[in-house]
Amino acid sequence: MIDLREVAVPPWEEDLLVTAQFERVVRVWSLAGAARVATFETVFEWGGRRLALVPGERPVVVAGAWARHGVRGYDLTGQRLWQDRSRTNVQIVTALVAGRVAVSYNRGSTRVLEAATGHEVCSLRGVRQVFALSPDLSLGLGSDWCRLLDQSLDLLGSRITVPSAFVVSAATDGEHLAVAEGGGPLRILDLDGRERARVADHFRHVVHDPVTATWIVVREFEEGRASLLRLTHDAEVLEQHPCDPLRDVATIRGGRALVLLTDEGVQVLDGSDWSARTLQVT
View 1 (cartoon, rainbow, N blue to C red):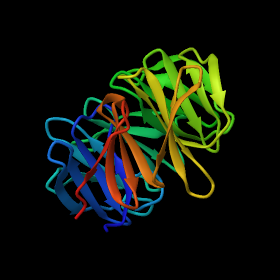
View 2: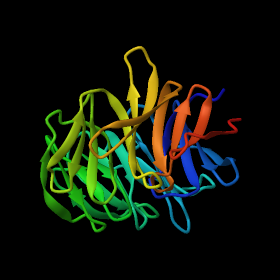
View 3: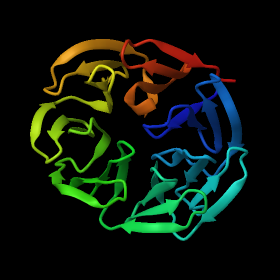
View 4: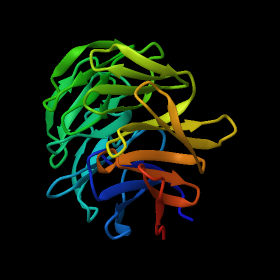
């Protein structure tokens, strides 16, 4: 079995996703073909979220490194398109709409780059990480706050306090925002920051399923077990579904599906009925 450690895909992508092995090998997969379409080496280093797939007419894989390599962009043949070594200690790489990618570092502001060229579009002062929620909304995370950003990355609304200063996942349905903080809690908020509900538990991932108009969250236990919960806007548990221990998880197809990276490989889970299929990992 290939030792896969990270999966990356923007929530609105319909077909492609990218996975990374324990150091440099990445694989691009097609859900329509249920198999990989490309394999190549990058500067990727495991630890953090340093991999992104930026969709478009010519999709780009962007990979970052903690050490001297900085960040690089590749086409799906594995050809390097650009490299930016101006800053090192890359922490998080996030695909955005319009062919852009947000690169967050250990220190300093998050930079937004053109994925095809590596040219800097802007710098997001005070933002330590960006969560891509939908084509129209992102979430910027600061030292102890988060704030919604529109498609142009302009600020929306007011700051929302994040007591733990650590968010592991966020999602929106356009009217509400769900934020999972490291070690808990999970909070469901109105877009103005007013809290509707909270659950004091450890959650790794949250997504809004548009088919059932519910929230799906991945809950993890200390002994390595995991389960999937379906919640209402008031955090009432409607369903619970067991799942294998997860190495990583990502949202795809507008929230209609989850990509689960387990010891057994890559699974694509339909959020409406829990049906899953496994991609061929060879």
